[in-house]
Length: 300
Image 1 (cartoon, helix red, strand yellow):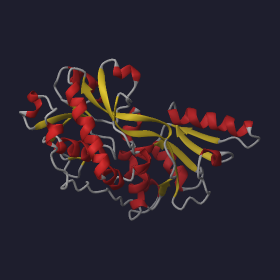
Image 2: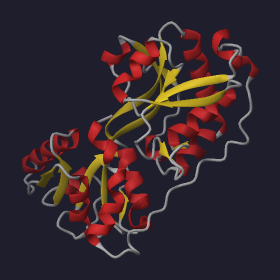
Image 3: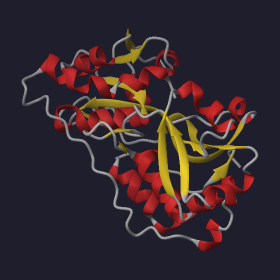
Image 4: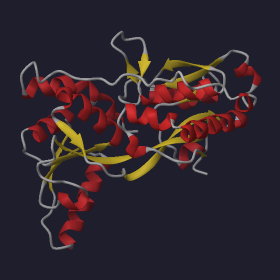
């Protein structure tokens, strides 16, 4: 997860205001998934540590400002998003009710280590460095994706189609690095280089795409999907349908002392994958490209 992505969705309304009429500024936020069919699995619930099971709650630490993964509803109080739906479903499988605590991203691991929360779920990448402190139940694959104008007028279907075209990226991002590598690949193949537009403004990048000054924007998969779905009520952009580029897993963080809880969550996630609930949640939020088929702990 990159900090700059946290503000992207907050700028969507500004994007429309800068580039069109008030009608174009309308946005459409997805509704939460229907989880009424999710039932408790007694065998999985038995794995939950008694200290957690006795409360009837699964305390979830998150940084609730990262649509479509997690953000607040219009009331400013109710968490919603793909991660919120998924952890609710996992908790229900374990006979628990998810209870979110909003905190700084930098404090999530500490809060888990000190048992302020039972799990963390905040678009946190499962990395070898973080595994030194906590365990992860991997639930999603994110990475770089390509966002284009609605209707994809320039026919961008993958990275090789970016040769010779204008591409907007954020300064210092992994997307900038990938775009430079792709540009070199284009030149090595005797094709025109990628025409990079490097800025520190998501809104500026989106305006460049809307007006045709660039052919594409490179961004993180969930963020790009959310912007495409909401900006201009979904009329401005679309995401090229391809697997995440340079993808890596998002993980639910669990205290290393709670190995049984990790197993319970892994089992619940796999059950949701197998019965289709997982796919339904990702479909609600238009992020099926990042779906996994097998739950894993620390990538195994």
